[in-house]
Length: 497
Image (cartoon, rainbow, N blue to C red; front, side, top):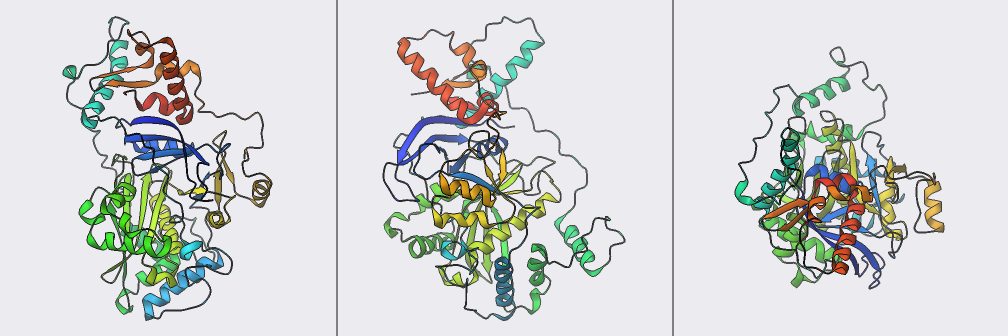
């Protein structure tokens, strides 16, 4: 497991991207130099969200527009009538090449039943970028600091088997050895995508002798049924749609001329951005750079965990890009942008359905990865409520961090009061709550060569005043409560000026 390295920036105040008022959006922010995928999974399950290397968590009790983390259980997901219309429209376009008009084919109002959001049903694109803090993160060598932290974490295990002194001095870079090699990859067979497609096709044709007895006999067409319709008839189609998964780190492909041109076209047409601000650097900072460490465990999905782009190629033209994070328990949608000339295809909604299909496909070999995270649900902002229209959608309680099915009863409560503790049990507590008794386990980076835990840090000589030490302690406690006791003891807190 890699070591997550973060620098906490504290409370942030800025312009709200939902109500457009200034100095009313309140959040907590931190810079992430590197994030282990499991750590980020734990963070988003506590209301955090990343934008490039910046991570933020809304102060929902105080902010103007409370933001509730929302997810869809992809295995419970059911298509709505609107979804089926969009899928059929796409299938007819690929088959016949005809551009259809009618409800849901434009960019403004969406389908008649409201499943499409602004911009043709865009599930994530309407979520604005957070206002970044003015403070710059400390400059560190991430690889060297990672080695320091790994060595520090190995110390307690070594000390448990020796009669070494209880005193633990700061770790020095010169004492480090090489990193341990990764665990050997399991040779256990795993289903390939081609094999799974064949099994689904056999089930559809009635050849179920070699399949499990749980094959669904319902005639209700599934998402996979709609998507596979044209996959089996590609030779006779007027158009070919190919979706390519690319690692974000592959900048030759994620920052190609076609991607940059599409991003600029989308931002100008849909969000009316200033063209002068749509530079390659700004796009990279927002959509390409990621602090997630790509991981390929033997029991993980074929593509591994990390940050990816799903590129939608219509014949030889790039028409959409979905930016996603693949994590141990979910696919998290970061952003989605598309060619406005193809708004008649409701590409925003189509993209979200494709991402749900990706989750369903991965879950066949990695059952724990069954959720689709859509970012934030903002009930106080009517144009952002469309995220809650996916079936099997759940909201995260901002106090106990448990998931609750988004029902009309919860919507009514949010109508009455924009901030609401979703957990109805007043005695329920956060099981991952950080308490002062856990403070000694927090890992700190004191300078480029010194890493230790808080227990030993407080024993070191320090020239700061008592007030400064207490303020520093309060900051560390605040950060630890926000990330939870598990991440507070596992991640490395950069405590450098």
